[in-house]
Each structure stands twice: as structure tokens, then as C-alpha cells.
Length: 328
Image (cartoon, rainbow, N blue to C red; front, side, top):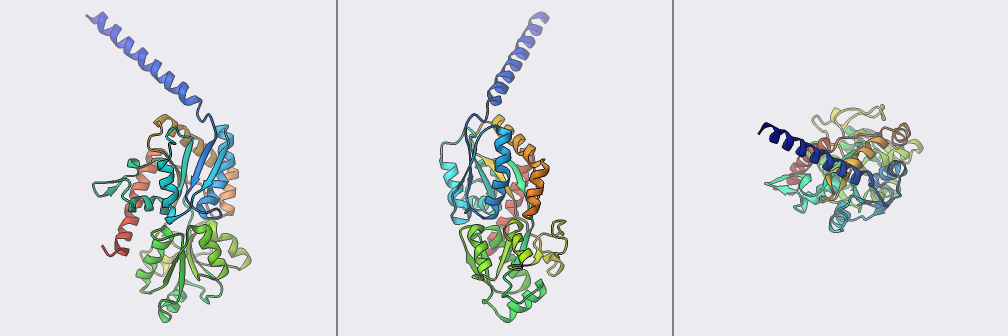
């Protein structure tokens, strides 16, 4: 009897090892063809710029061409839904999304389970890529040089200060709404189809203020075409040591956006882990850190489990603000 049990245990162990070897061998050949990275925003926006920083490095790590496809519209919803609707469940198509894009899915009821958002119900998180500071940035024609001056001006001119965003319900929009509430002011919201359109609108003076990710506006600080007033995060940034936080004027103000990669929900788990390891390797490169820093960001890799928990918690915070906006 004991011999039979030992034999059974040995066979079970052998089969387990054999299965693991097969799984590993299958995963080892992945990716085996071109990887398509869907960016649900216009070229030139914050999401697109970060995607293009890591693109060539991912090609080297994965040994395959990585093609970026921009599919903008509706705060990232158009591209995100297109990604989900395509037969891309083998892991060779991935989504490079922002806070706003995932929020747009939540607004459509995607990933909602028992009233709460669970990203794993609609996407498989691969890794966060960056969490650059958002900066309250103004066109120099608006004669304000601090948050307190902006508040004073907006109170004297209700509804006349135009603030742009990457779309209704996006992080940049909701940050502006939170600012209005905290400051007790009323501004005029002008939504665009992504930061690739909102950034140029600010540069031209079409809108006067933008709560934008640093990679979108940093270049304008050096030549004086834009003026940064303050960070939207609750703490200061080593990348912008001279900028205060909005929290220093409006206590309790703290909002941050992020960018990261997702796989189709049907992608095999071992492939998601391979994608994660590739992203982690790329984000550990000094050259990538330098490129991001030059544009106002920094690498912020996570394991798949960490990223899943982070996204769910963060989206919950943004949804609470969205509910206030909707008057619910």
C-alpha cells in the first residue's frame, strides 16, 4: 500500500514537472511576431510620448517589432473598446492606457462587479510604466504666477477662464473640477480628444490653463511659452524642485495620473508574466530613466499583482469624484 502511494506521488510529481516544462517551453517562444501597442489617444500626448520612449527598448528585449497604433476618442474609450473587441488574446496586442482611459471603461460599466471596479474583470494588468506629476500650467497671456493669483483672478472673472482637458471624465478634467470645488471658482471647461490636442490648444492660447502630465508641458517651461504654477500631487517632485504643490494653497488637494500597460483578458497568464518581465527590464535601464526625466516623468514599474491592486484603488477614488461631478 505504501509502495502504491509512493508510486502515485512520484507519477503526480513527474506529471507536474512535465506540465510545467511544457508551459515554460511554450512561453519561451513568446512573443513570436510583431507586438501591436494600442494607444487610445492622439500622437504627441502624454500617453503616446511615454509609449514611444519604451517602444524601441521593448523591441530589443522581446526580439520583435513593436508597432504603435493611435486610436483616439472619448477620453480613451474608443481605442480601449477597439482593443477589447479585437481577437488579440494571444498577447501580441497590448494596450498602453492612462488613468482617463481606464476611467472611461468604468463609466461604460466595464469591470464593475458589485458596484466596485475590478480591472481584472475587463483587462489583465501588465505593469505601471510611469506616474509623472500633473502640473497646473497656464498660457503666459493669463497674468497669474501662482495658484493664489489664479484663484483671485477666477473669482473676479467667473466662467471666463478656459481650462482644457484630454476629454470629459479624464484625469485632467476631473482634476480641474476638483480645483473649482476646492477654490470656490467657476471656469469654462473645453474638452479635447486627448492631450495631443489639448497641449497645442494651451500653447496657442486657445485655452488658458491645463492640468497636464509633465511630459506634455515641460518643454514649454524652458522657452517661456508656458508657465507652470504648481503640482497637483500632494508632495513635491525632484524633477520640478521649484514648483510648489496646489496643496500648499488648497489644503487636502492631491490628484495624480498614471500610465501603464494591459493585456487582453483572455491572454494566457504565463504570457502576461513574460510581458511584465520585459517591461520591468526596460524600465530599469538608465537610458529610459533619462529619457523620461527629460520629459518630466520617471519609471514606476510594478508586478502584475501590485498593479492590479493599485488600479482598482485609484479608479475607486476617481469614480467618487466623477459621482460628485454627475451630481449623484
